Image 1 (spheres, rainbow, N blue to C red):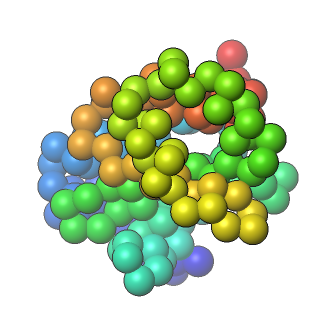
Image 2 (image 1 turned 45 degrees about the vertical axis):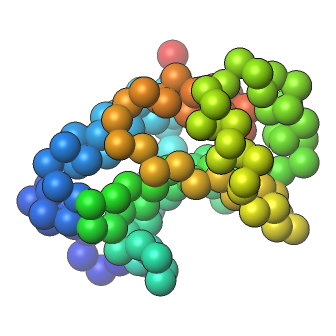
Image 3 (image 1 turned 90 degrees about the vertical axis):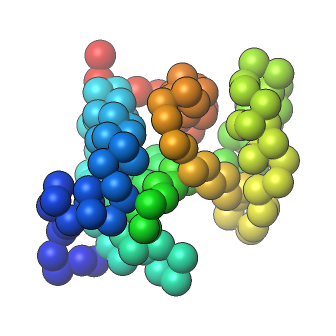
Length: 137
């Protein structure tokens, strides 16, 4: 857990203004469809911050921030991978590539995206729906 949550100025300094705008759009995009707990933590070795969306002890997705880079991580278990694979041709080539290259661990396939614009948000929405149905209308 973080003792001090970064403010807009700190995030802008870390990410740069264009990426911070994408970060805010991605958060708004998720917040619009999902009512979740939001947890800030240290980002481990590779990232400065982790911003996790959770509910009932289950993680929906996590956003990561480091200098001039944002990450969007979603982890698919066995059933979720099956659902994605049934529909994979309806996703952008980049999403399919990241899915293919993602490391599979005992708890699932860890897909990390590093968006630089909003072009994959619609695919992110479909991935999140596989993980959990939106609970906001």
